[in-house]
Each structure stands twice: as C-alpha cells, then as structure tokens.
Image (cartoon, rainbow, N blue to C red; front, side, top):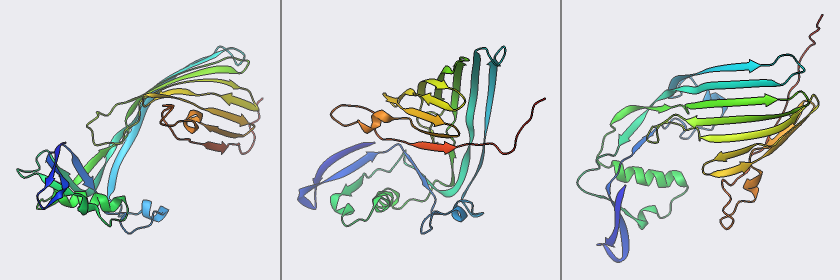
Length: 253
C-alpha cells in the first residue's frame, strides 16, 4: 500500500490519510451475519463454502523385536486442496486515478471491529462492482517430516519439521513453519515430554505428562513469561488434555 498523510482541506487542524495504491484482495461471505455459531449453522446445507482436501504420506518403521530400539521416519504432504465460497471478491491492484481518503471522523461512534471493516470496505468499494461473485481459499498445505527414536527403557526423542507450502501471496490458510525437538520418557503408566520448538522467529518450550489413560500439557510455557521488555516470543499459552481407553479385550494365543 502507498499512502500519505496530508492536511484536511475541510479542517486545517486535522489530517487525512490518502491511499494512492493498494495491492490486495478482499473477499467475504455474509452467511454468518445475524446467525449464531451453532452446529446446525456450521453443517447447514446452505453454507456458502464447498471443497475438498486430502493428505499423502509414507511411514517407515524399523524394529528388530519388542525389546530393541524402534526407529520411525515419516513424510507427508497434508491439507492439499481448498474451498470455493459464494461471496463477493474485490481486487485492488487499481483503485482508480483518485486516491481513497480516510478521515478520523469516519471512525467515530463505531461499535466493534466489524464496523471498522465496513467503513474501510465502503470507502474502497464506492462505485465498484465485485470482480467475482465466488472466491477460493486454499487449505494450509504443508510438508511434514518426522523422525522418532525410542529406546526399550522408555527414553526417546522426536524431531518434527513442518514447512508451509503456500506462497506468501496465496489466498489461503497458512500452516506456520515449525521445527520441534521433543525428548521424552514413555512407559506403560507414565509419560513425560518436553517439546522445544522454533516458531515465528522465537523459541517455545512446553511440557506434557500422561498418567495412565489421561494426559495434560502445553506447548508454550515460556509464553506466560513473555513481555515487551524481555522479548520472549511468541506470547500466549495453550493447554491440552485428554483421556483414552479401549473397549473390550484382545486375547493372544
């Protein structure tokens, strides 16, 4: 975007923002407008998006017997495909000879981010018709490489690398590229793991524990300590938990 801030001819004590060039695509649907986000809404037959996705992958495993070390290597290309939506699409590679002007008063008395977006949309789209009435959004296609080594005594280590396969300019959901190393101790009734990852230009460190069929963990303990002053990124915390159990019994002869 090329822009400049100039004095407002209508008010010498104020300034306005002139947008002269914009390379962007704006597309949206109104399906969720005035609708509550419920399962019936998400799985409605009138939902505006249609598409498909699939994964491709291979796994190699090497273990002489249950008492020997186990090596597992994997490669996969996941989330191949995309969704096509019924909705308006505007492309702003050419916004016209006259710059689009934004004044601070344009944003007075607004309620919520949706109102701000509506103001920007109306300014950019004045006198325009949509370039398309459908638009496509790609799935977060990524290349996944994994290596896992497990010793019989319970100690093991996992290496995972995820590479975003979408270009920076693609209209798509993106899988952040990530490199993670996870040392662990895993036996029948207890498992401990410490994932350390390089993500979005920063290091994250987490921890997880499994006792019997239940587990609890986080991928970013350092996020709790992150502030502007200490420079720890990324900030934030995620927590996951679960329980798994089998039904019935398999008997071996």
